Amino acid sequence: MDFSKEHMDKLGHGIYTPMDVTLLPPLHLIYAENPSDSGKQNEGISIRIQVHSTVWQRWHDGDEFIISTMKEVADIAAKGQSVILQKNWRRLAELMNRNFDLRRRMFGDKCLGDLNIEMVEVARGVGAASKFTGSGGAVVVFCPDGPSQVKRLGDKCRKAGFIIEPIQVVPSCLNDVDLQTLSK
Image 1 (cartoon, helix red, strand yellow):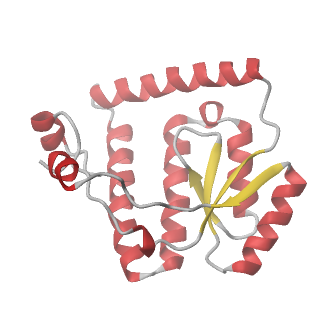
Image 2 (tube, helix red, strand yellow):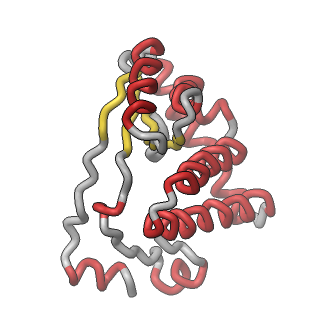
């Protein structure tokens, strides 16, 4: 995804380039078996909306920290595509971890939530790479050391009350017209 200012100003959206999902290494999803009660969940959502709104405003106000950090996040995505094509799995793990670290610096622990941070830390505790899937509630994990690392991660997840599942990535259902529209 390319969200450069030029594309956003001209098109009102980014440029999306599909990737062959068969190139991805095995990935896993970790989520909480018993997430926090709904009151805390709603409070957390409210905090995340406020903080996202604040970061968005800081971007538009020209906050150099937010702008430079977002540029680094975009650079990580471009590097990620390259390392996936090269099958450089160690570098992919580094990039995934860096992505989470940058997000944490921008948004802060209160916004990310203790449970979400704990899922990342459980994964990192066995040497796996981990980052958010989106706005939280689950993390995507890559175990560069393979099945034995996945087993260790599964054991740690069960002890922490988390569920771990393999991710089945499916190809995009966009047709050629959709893709052309999104690429213009």
